[in-house]
Length: 245
Image (cartoon, rainbow, N blue to C red; front, top):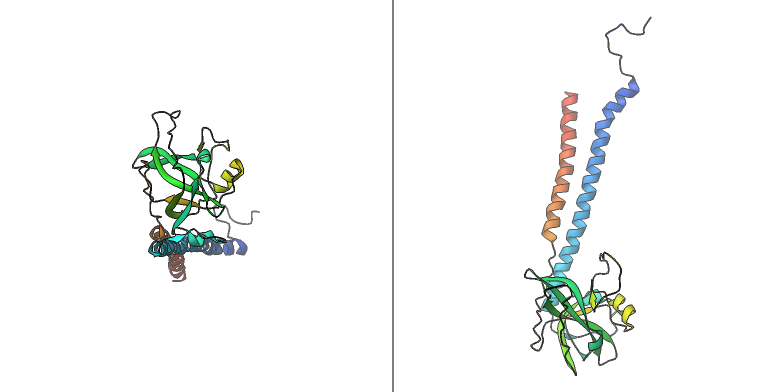
């Protein structure tokens, strides 16, 4: 004979009932953990961006200083206004592609500056418009003789994306990478770049944007993730209360 009359439901085993009761709790714990982790990550990014904004404000308030000698942590000098005397190496000047200014495509003109103390540093001299075709590469004269470059010190990002790691053609690079330039040119340059803020009527645009910290965006995302975690925990408590009633 069958264990149960036809048409009746098989009673759940104690183990199956426990699993069904635990499943919402386990799912809620996992969801809260994920939401809180995401919120903590956004909080960390927010704090980093706030620190960057404070660094930018402090750097802009500081007076112009000579390019430091023997600096170990160049990030501490990021966005500082500096001066550097030397001579441009015209033979090694190059362009950085895919630079846009006010909706126009162009290049950044970068030249090594041979410092009076024997070191070398890359100087981003400014923006120049692209030609009518890709083959029409602009030619920008290089100042001759001794110069004193004044500009904002920056540390180029080490992580960037390139479609192909090909050698530069016609003096056009896809990214500004001092280490890569040094390896290709044989000229050891400092791991920083001076974004020039003055020039002698060379027609280059030196409109360097202020770094956007984006801290407010991360603060909004952080609050959203924490709100999701609170909602998940609140729903679990509400259903648990109803079940007990």
